[in-house]
Every structure is written in structure tokens, then in C-alpha cells.
Length: 324
Ligand code: G3H
Ligand code: 13P
Ligand code: ZN
Image 1 (tube, rainbow, N blue to C red):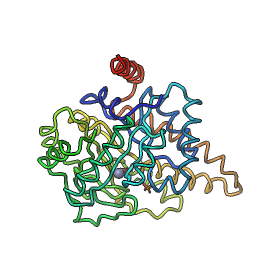
Image 2 (cartoon, rainbow, N blue to C red):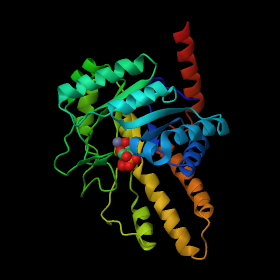
Image 3 (cartoon, protein in one colour):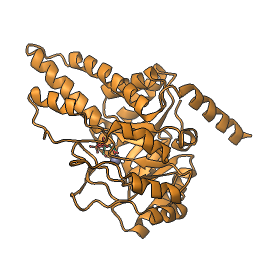
Image 4 (cartoon, protein in one colour):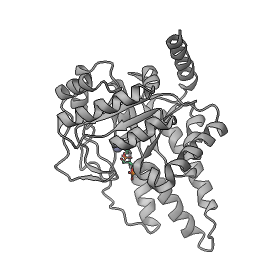
């Protein structure tokens, strides 16, 4: 069942966060749906502009619609990740996406407000939810590379003003995380002090945390032991901080890099250990199973495991009340 982010966040707020996972291919899609059902969790399947270019947006839609029939128990949001204005409109008009992210965070405040408000109007007219972003994370997202030192945390006062002016349904905040595998040095972590201030200004309003992969040290070591050359200082978000962030209003936690690391480790190890093999279905099967287990483990950390029945019932009730 495809639901909107707004419907899902009404159930999750303050209790648990929902994992938002990027997909580009069939193996990720099976793994994600299987892991979510294994852990009885709702989820957000997110598609970047890069994924739409790589796989073709029609292929992704067909694949996800097929997954919906293969896994009828699943409750999920179909979300555009880091959209520009034109891509948001394409997704809103598609009748397939139930949520879009307009990312104009690189623009000055007024321009960000102006663009976001336009997208909100078009999206809400079609019942689609809108995530916007204020502040800038470090790392690479889509075509924008934010150099270390140029990232800027979300200003809590501006966040309140931004939400009031735009009417967006959720807000991605820069609270110390960054995209990719190299997030922190030393004892750095999520800026809970900033998150708390944002929640105080916006009580009850759903917040989003990008750049939330945990970058397990064991994955980095196994990739390098199998021929990879990743910087061993790679470091991510402590997964035990997901639930404390959820209690402070974070309803969506974005995880992409961890899936890429699992893919890389599985394929490097598989072909190292089976040098005579050239059938990609061997590592593909291992990846789908390992990715499903990873998703299930994230559901536990996010607090979303075993909420599926409650979420479905609550959303059906919301829809009934809206129709009445
Ligand atoms: O924030 C970026 C996501 O990890 C998606 O990455 O643009 O390479 O698909 P991508
Ligand atoms: P990671 O690079 O930490 O997985 O973040 C993904 C993300 O924020 C996608 O929008
Ligand atoms: Zn992101």
C-alpha cells in the first residue's frame, strides 16, 4: 500500500523514525521490501535524480509497482530524493510518487522559500507530501558538492519561519551529519543540541535527517581486505542515536551509503572467493538476503519494527475520517 509521508509521519511522530532507503536496481528493491516485511516495518523508498537517470524513471516505477504486488503486505512511501523544481513537478504529475523533496537549500533563504512554496502548492493540489531543506549538509548530494567547512547547520528560528512561509510537510535539517562514508572525525556526532532547539520551535512538526548511514567499520575492513581501497577512517552515524533523534521529532532517517557498502563488500568477496565464476546472480542472491537482514536490523534501531499493523490501521482510519 503506497501512503503519503504526511500520513505515515502522523503515526510515527515522537515514537519512532521511518527508514528512507535509496534504490537504483532490482536487487535493492527485493532486499528492501523483504527486510521491511521481515521486521514488520513501514518504509520510504526513495529515488534520486541520479537513480532516475541511471535506471530510467519508467523502469523504477514498473519495478516498484511489481514489488507492490509481490509483497502486498508492504506499507511504504514513494519519495523523490533531493529534487529540483522541474523533477518535483514531473513526479507530482506522474500519479506514482506520494512524496517529493524539493531541495533548494543551496539558494538564499527567500529564494528557497519561494521555490518551496510553489512546489507545495502543486503537490498539495494532488495530495502529494513535500519535504524541504534548510541548512546545508557536507558531502556530495546529486551534482552539488559541499566542501568541508562550508556546510551550515539549520538555524532553529529560521526553521520555524521557513515552515510557516512554505507550508511544507516535513523539514530536512542540517544537524551535523553529511552524505557519504566520511561524516565525522574523532568524537563528533549528531548535534542533538541543535535538533532540540528546532523541535522546541516546531513542536509536533516532522523533521528529517539526511546523511544517516552508520558506515560500519567491519564493512570498510572487509571491502579493503577483498581488494577495495576505502579510507579506513570512514565513519558514520551511531545507529543507537536514531531512536533518541526520533524522540526529538525526527520521523525520516535517510540511509543510502550503507546499502552501497554492503553491495560492494558482497560482490568483492564473492568474486574473490569464486574466481572461476561470472554469473552475477550468485552475489545478487547473497546481496538481496544481506540487504534484507540489514533493513530489518535498521527497523529495530529506528523503533519502527513491529509497527506495520498499527500503521496500516491508523492510515486507513485517517483516510476514512478524511472522506467522511
Ligand atoms: O543524497 C544522495 C543520495 O545518497 C543519492 O545519491 O544522487 O548518487 O543517487 P545519488
Ligand atoms: P547517506 O550517504 O548517509 O546514506 O545519506 C543518504 C541521504 O541522505 C540520501 O538523501
Ligand atoms: Zn540526502
